[in-house]
Amino acid sequence: MKMNPHTAEQLARQRTAEFRAEAARRRPAASPVRTLRYQTGWAMIQIGLALVMSARRRHGAMSLELP
Image (cartoon, rainbow, N blue to C red; front, side, top):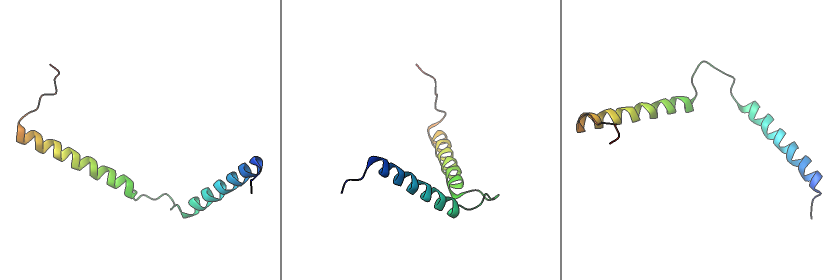
């Protein structure tokens, strides 16, 4: 059964609104505690910086100048 394009668009908008409302209900209120994504991002940055510093110590000062 083929659906009228106008009806399909209305149904899609309704579903999108329902999903957004559900997501808003599930989303925790803003809190002073940092999110897991934020903490994970900072941990990855710290690991990367530690690896770069470790490599520089092992291989001496690496020049970033272009020839």
